[in-house]
Length: 387
Image: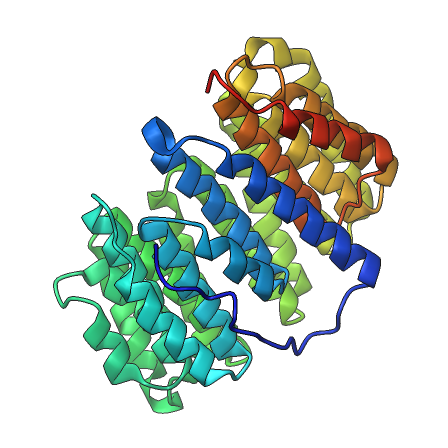
């Protein structure tokens, strides 16, 4: 295990949520981490680290950096290095360069275990720290020259600070990456163009170039990623006031979703991605109608889904209702998620579902009432052999 990060402090530049909301989120994430950490390393080391990583990412997303550091200290393997690097990126965003550099140093020292590709992921995230700090030479020195996909991700990170004169040449690089039809390289090119569009969106020729490139690239992705990427594009457009263009992208995502047959356990979670986009863009009625349809379809098919895959749909629906402000429906769906996640006789899937539901509550801002808190604690206390 790497040296401690918990002594590193950070101040947030964003408006803080209420004290009660912050306390609720921190408590839920601490419970999520404690529950999954009961999972034995042998033979569940990979699952445990993956789920722990998801909790720490949520802590970072919510600005709970001290909790993130404390949890990271208790992890092992390359995923520990990954979350330390992500923590360093947040410190860099906050202008805390010394803490960011310390995280970069420590992340690269974490023993990766048996995973060589895990080391590549960590190196890429560390490189992003240096990009944020303005040290591009060190960023590129961190990632091996033969790792083209990883270096492409660094290029996307550079977009926000790239000199104006270099923007078109960078877009040329994204075009070449997409043209390879290699999944990792093409995905990097798409992510790069999304970041590039965020930078150049009010420059009409460049905006049109990005939209044309992305519309041509999306069909090369798996169906679920096509839906998600269209929503990502819509979010970029909407954030800059291009509501009509954003709505067209959400419509496209909706068309793709409805025209494709997904597994029963994947249908509601992906459909909620589209519904939440409608809600974010101000069409609450359409979002609510879509959630009701997805919920009705899921309830009719739930028994056809293996029990360790059921809770994810309830969580997704709860997040949609919470975004709408429909707290009664959110509470019902979260209660159903807790119940569905507690069915399996083995503790490993129960621990994973409990962690995921607590993370979902925290990130969505749902504050569970007493009866759900008691249910959470009962499930956590029951995590024991057989795993």
